[in-house]
Length: 400
Ligand SMILES: C[S@@+](CC[C@H](N)C(=O)[O-])C[C@H]1O[C@@H](n2cnc3c(N)ncnc32)[C@H](O)[C@@H]1O
Image (cartoon, rainbow, N blue to C red; front, top):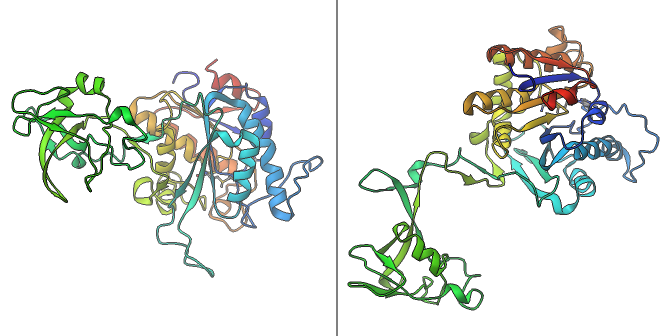
């Protein structure tokens, strides 16, 4: 395996690793920090100088996260982005903290992630069925994140077919958003000509053509989505058709919106378990590889969707790696698309909980679980897990 491609692991406190990485050396950070549920968060930093002004448990959590997020910002490339998983316990504090560290202008999304579709049935109150993913750019103006995916594009949504077999769907050429009208966009309100018999569309009259003006369903004047020069450049992507409207038959113009392999669709901000997997899926994935050794792993589908927003040679960092889901997802993504992503995972030697599956199975630390899974992933790909010290991680990330 090429140096610097695939998976590497560092067992250490993440603050120490972050401090040793080069500035601007990472394209994508995914983290899933302890959620501060009351029993998942052990705060071990030197507490001097970590006053947050926030009371109690929240204050300690913010004090733990602040220097790590500040260091994470430093290691992100100008085109980079960070995704942080979190639930209701700390989402409010984390959002404000990310605003503080990255800047409000770098906020990209707060995604709702439906990881528990049945909802939490134990305990009082609502059956919570989601958590969050907060997404921030290092610099929104130069961020390379493409918030779209090929996963949710259904060829069935493109029901029309040309004689040579190309699939497409009809989209109205008129802008259906009432915010855009002849008053707000006067240059996009003009007459065009179309023939419902041949389907041809032009910006000038021709034999058999009728004049078509953009109108809303209620007959009020509307505007086109394309300018006159664009219509002239792409007449084959337009078609004139007779349609039945609220006010009887009329002639209208449609764009032929083509389906093609690799076509992307904008990502919505609610990600459903049937698209990305659930906590149950994640537990099964882990069990299949090394056994049910970690209680709340993330599904690889969630991380693969995150990876799909960045180039396929991204340098990825997960500095709260847990069971190593991010590294697993990177290996799966590279195998699927031939990408050359590399992933540095970091986890501390946090002791496993006595009585837990991992402890019973002889894993003394969470880092031992991370290592075991990433090594299993690499073996499946015919490779070997690279194990690094905090001081050698920077060179590996840089492919040196
Ligand atoms: C919620 S879990 C991550 C789960 C992971 N996303 C997965 O799918 O398995 C958070 C992890 O961060 C680790 N951790 C907590 N504090 C840390 C620190 N200061 N440095 C490195 N790892 C830390 C914990 O041991 C735990 O494994």
